Image 1: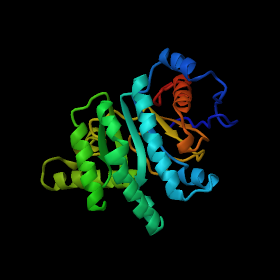
Image 2: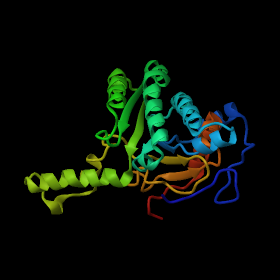
Image 3: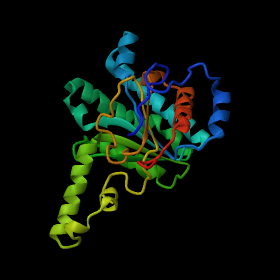
Length: 263
């Protein structure tokens, strides 16, 4: 990722938090080129809950509701692809009670929160490992993917038990198997071969990666696909992130000069 910027702060290029209301920001964004694919690291649920005097799981529940809201808003302004970082391969290290609660929230999200998105024309796809997820979560995933398979207004990748390094490891294993079987020569393997074996195959690489909560790192998220994505970091905790915050991030993206390594 070429440029790091903290929204509303002094680091990097500054986005003015007073820069118009939501409707005027929509007009400004509409004058520029929209990112085709927006990926979001939804950080800050736990801190949000702590500040509210609530258990961490309440923050994750609020974050689940916010995800539905932001997907709808993104679709309304014309975004065609979104990837949301829901549960990482490292999140299994959290306390057992929290992980169990998160799995329950996933089922609730698939069976309740995302149902409106079915009628909204969103196609839901889960990326990441599925071999370690509980069976009731897998069943909920299969149901929502099947129900939305024909939808085409916006594709929403939900990264669950996902890690960028693990994804590349799995892709490398598949390519190694094909090389052993003589289906491909090792020296013939190119970037396109790797990309076609990733979880996001068929989806354009993200143009814009947004991280909420103020932390300045990508946390093992889409590390192959985001090689030339623009990164915008917002100090806003995910449950408080709004459509207006999304517009501000897109405006920052539109101000950047994307050279992809050239002059």
